[in-house]
Amino acid sequence: MQVINPATGALINEIPSDTKEHVLSKIEKLRKGQPLWADVPVEERLAILLRFGELVADSVEELAFVLTQETGKPLQQSINEIKGANNRLVHLEANATKWLAEEVMVSEGATKEQISYEPLGVVANISAWNFPYNVGYNVFLYALVAGNSVVYKPSEFASMTGLKFRELLWKAGVPEYAFECVIGTGEVGQMLLEADLDGYFFTGSYATGRYIATQVAPKLVPMQLELGGKDPLYVMDDVIDVRQAAINAAEGAFYNNGQSCCAVERIYVQEGIYDQFVEHFIEEVKSYKMGDPMDKSTFIGPLTREPQVQVLLDQVQDALLKGAELKHGGFSPEGEGYYFTPTVLTSVNHGMDLMKEESFGPIIGIQKVANDEEALKLMKDTSYGLTAAVFATDKGRAMQLLKQLPVGTVYWNCCDRVSPNVPWSGRKNSGLGSTLSYQGIRAFVQPKAYHLRD
Ligand code: NAD
Picture 1 (cartoon, helix red, strand yellow):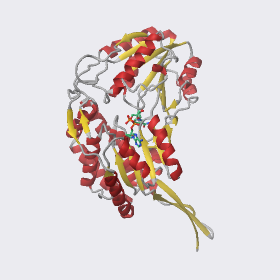
Picture 2 (tube, rainbow, N blue to C red; picture 1 turned 60 degrees about the vertical axis):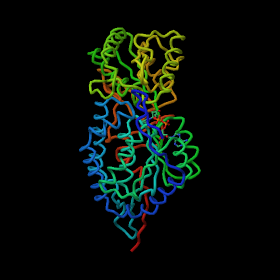
Picture 3 (cartoon, protein in one colour; picture 1 turned 90 degrees about the horizontal axis):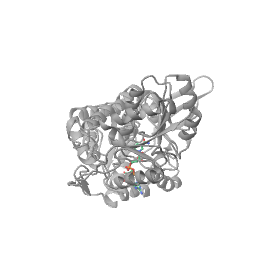
Picture 4 (cartoon, rainbow, N blue to C red; picture 1 turned 90 degrees about the vertical axis):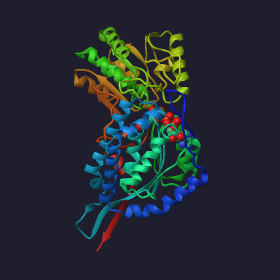
């Protein structure tokens, strides 16, 4: 499999893809070893994973270089991601033992009742490239601490990072029979779907997730899907610092080149502050440095996947044909690499793909709204349900609106944020099931009820 540097289009590596034979033999090894890993006390499993965290911390610069090379993520943002993802380990250290412990529900009387939490077995983690540390950790660390063996399939756009995970997990003491990595495109993912596994945990697009759901359903094993979004942000007219609101909104839209599942994908601004907001927003976007992702001062690097350039060009074209105004960007600059200039469009509406389809790139539409009622109607007008944000001074007014949104995560005066302390879940076409929080620990175990009579 060829690894291409998205900043230059040059070949940087060739990694052998796994064949069906490899995939099956790796799964067989995991199948045989999983009961041994499950027998290791949870405290010991946790200690091994914390050691993994230390090994990652010791080589942040090298790992960030690898991530930037294969995905084009600006180096400083790669460093931020790798360091930031450690909060999953902090969360597990504080909570895993508690949430995996046996629970005595009835201790008096003739019949004692208790619950134990057993691992699922061998689980698949089919992952995405945009935040491989965050979304990988959400699954494989939580699955491992619960005593599962994991077959991890990194995205074909983050395979070198996936192999680094394996190297460092093994080095930390995770047995080779508890964690394996399979390399390849969707074809290798398909091999996992055809294999006999005990759980499927997927992060990626709605289209692939929906397909996976149809394939896994007849197996009757747990399945979780963390999919895309079209996340709205609404700015109410009571915000005191409109400029700061615009700066924060722009960061939510353009961080990691807009390639975040919870990136701000559409913005609504109440009419009283609309012109002021747009002016500050454009000023901020103009200040972004686009260029070589290896330069630590770069904020906008190349897109990770070449075909996405055309998706964005099409969204701009469609919006302009339907009456949008292009305020900044809108094109892919000449030269090497899959770059796209940060793009801002106004006079947009929901007849445009830009406001309805996931863009997953550095492009945003800003729409004027009269009041909260209109904003709510537009925010809800989507097939997705990942996150939604409101910027406002009046918390009561913001909460009133946030409560009515059918999404897994809501933000007041912040956005594009994930925390291990609360569940990460999508509704509607954004997914099924939760990772993170105690729910994300329990996602990797199955309860067994004991009725015990002396
Ligand atoms: P993708 O769906 O193209 O690929 C995801 C993974 O699925 C890859 O490993 C790919 O090889 C594999 N795959 C593809 N076809 C398959 C098949 N037929 N069978 C099994 N596996 C198959 O998605 P992507 O481009 O890697 O990621 C971007 C998408 O992921 C965006 O929509 C983004 O919003 C979403 N995402 C969601 C979250 C979240 O937590 N909700 C986090 C990150 C990314």
